[in-house]
Image (tube, rainbow, N blue to C red; front, side):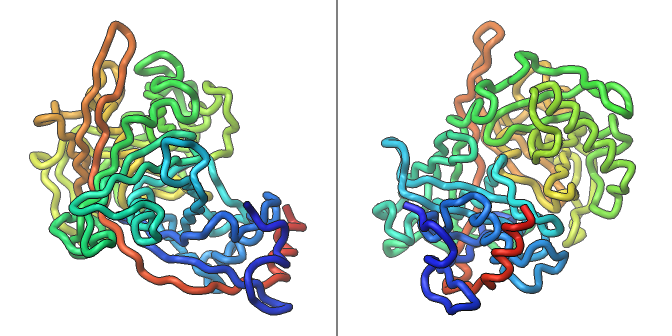
Length: 393
């Protein structure tokens, strides 16, 4: 049940509305967690409330909870399950930093791990040591994903030896399995029916693989846009960003989708190469990875400083499928583990596929993330900001 308008948001004053929240880190991302029933039912008021909560649009998001970065301007909305085989509903939202837009056409794999921990700590799923299974219905894709959450004293464990490159220290490993998410957006793992297509862009033809697993993604060789796949953010100049956007827009057009959405997410891939990570400056050698990959996303589009978990699952599966642009550049995996060299380090994915004629099925698409609760409390939102943003929509 949703509240009807911002006047019924819990507590607050005549000038400010109050809303309870939890702040969680999942993998290399952070998100504000809200209960769905604490948000207005009207879509315009809901988005205006979220934008005000985050302090958007503003590059610093100084007047809200947003972290002024693609990785930290994220929202998880939690609701009671709407299907019998799930423990909860989870809606992901990417909140634009510089535009008054909240996007729901994408999921975040890093935050999905935090959803598993959140469900345990909030008592939505009874904790059973040593591992508790959480069945998450992601409403963005209409698919079920499975989180295996380690337990300590009745709560989601925090400490452990799992390292997520791009996150300081180590933590308890949460395994996420996206094998049941094929076709969540388009209805098919390979929406065009082909392992690769030629996309006609303003910069020339580009061979690409469009795959719908965990997130709808368009994979293409980095050299198609004059890159290697080892670049850091400063190397993504406007010309390169425009070239990448052109591939994304051509893929959307081929699928009959709007060109201005966040999906299909563009991912550049290339053969394993030596490079230096962004942030820490650590060396990654070609021998320790099976391919390099970079992602551009958000609104406006910017290079991802790590690698989205959902795209990791999709990349691992694509690497095993002959004929895809990912398979063409990847080193054959060892024991079904595909090591993705991304901007902040290495992300291993356990994948397994089966082929029957021209049909592929996904039997495993698993990676580990860590997560923990950072804060919880009450956020205050200016009612005038909500009204102004809603009127501008």
